[in-house]
Picture (cartoon, rainbow, N blue to C red):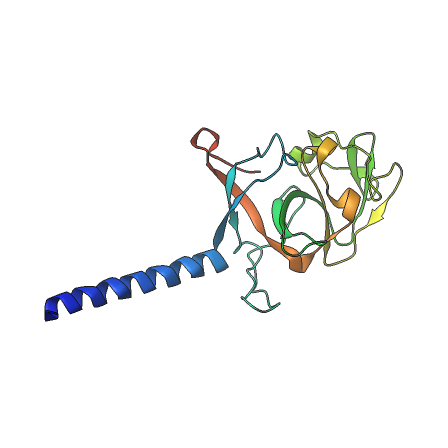
Length: 192
């Protein structure tokens, strides 16, 4: 084999290795793509939508550890978050964050009450009628969210299995915040 051919092969291999390392680093620490498998977040997200999730915002986890790098900010009410499903760590779920640690949440006549007051700081939550369903979503049931946990609900409240059914999401299960829909082309948009 000629020296120039060997050199070209070596350059191709180096380029491929660098590209793979960069792709893995971006996926692990910055941004990751997910596909929406169900209608639990309709109308915000449709079945089959492909979204990008910002991992850097809340602090990405180091692979093979429970250590999380510092994030740019804490999750807030109204954020659409992707997290590891508490009842099956092999599944990732997506829901809207409703209440954070230290708050008491209640569903009353279709509205969300935080510490006894209607939500005013997240317009997306105000627009949705939330149904009293599940063990944790019963009428007049107040849920105290402990520090390090989140109460989440699907935007399609009538058919979403969420914190009303299985409880709270531990902080360490949060993967990141859904930032935008990138596919299909007619649905490209940022997410609130």
